[in-house]
Image 1 (cartoon, helix red, strand yellow):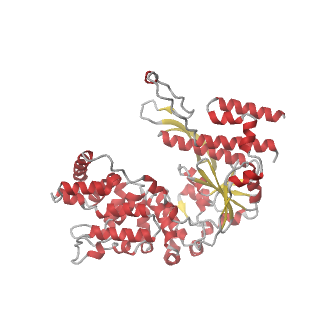
Image 2 (cartoon, one colour):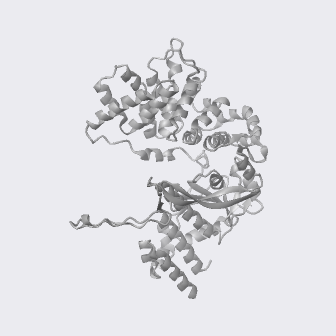
Image 3 (cartoon, rainbow, N blue to C red):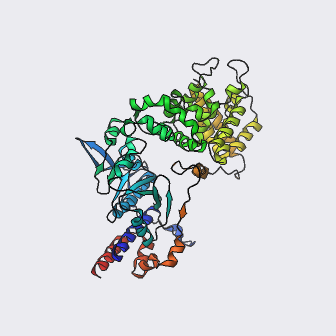
Length: 533
């Protein structure tokens, strides 16, 4: 690649990064005259405000659709929340840069990125396949000072970021592309799309997306699940997150395949289980797991409440729990885990049939033990357990058994999870046929008391939810024999000129720092100057 082409690709990459992560600017110094001035900050081109004033903005949405036997990508406008619009814009900028990269090496988008477009979801990462050796991509990345990681399990791969979008690239040949797609878990993930928009779909994944069915490539479900039993849990996640149904060929393979989960390490199970609990409809996936005898591989005590009868209630404890998860209508990991585990101690404490004394405390022990085994980090485990252990508080308060000290103890114990606590209590009450207004009454009293307490009670950090790295990525070898090579940008800079300095020398540095409307005009002038050299 010529120096000019490298420079142009670098320009695109830096612009993509800056669009995703705008430069923070220092606030002006205090000035008594400042309060008299109101400055209207210019909005991005996609931030046209909703005429009703509801706080939504108009943005473009790019989606894949079926029409008249054809599959194509279209753009349409929609009114969305500003943070959603920003995410969509960030993804568009990042994927446009990947398409630009496709001008220099032949690459395909593959897997979840394509699937999510059909189901109108925003992907958190992108998988791409290069039909050139990874050495070609690494040469480009090195030349542009793009940080990347190199690893290897089933395939050698390179991982890098475009802004906050994670990109995972593997290499194969044109002849091996068919084999690569055939080894994927489900047909809806086995569709490839070139950067120019053409689809390569040898296993009819587009048809399955259109028909909303989940099946394995080639209809070989039994062999696929035996090769990698974790695919069973990935299938549960797909069923929970997308409006699809399991294909009959997949269902026929389940009775003989579920047993293979006993050979999977608990942390790998925990990784997929966490995704199920954050899916759009976790109760659907959990019911599917119970129907096909998978719950025992998540937690034996959770499995023990299936069929456990309760006096005075229709259905068993599991039925009640599933109704509670469904009623919560939440994708929040901590809340959904707390609801799932809130009655798991009942089988252990049952002395008289249908009576479960002090089951909340025992359920908390079960939650701690189970989630630790599955690889969740201790911060999340403790927050879930505290919610579980206190879930009977509302019942006690309604009976008049809780004094002010008990209310104060609840506030100090749960702190930032009080909102989750009352969402759990409402879901628990409504699933048992009780009135949610009783929960709201107790919630208001707790809120009044909380306002009278000191302000130094900090909420638990929501960053705990982002620390799921303690649960290993199933794409990495479980035996920890893999050695990842982290390329140090500082060491590379010693070996060759810094491209940032090169760009600064030709006048781009000032352009990048401003990143406002004039940037595009100046970049065009720069490109024209480079073309004339």
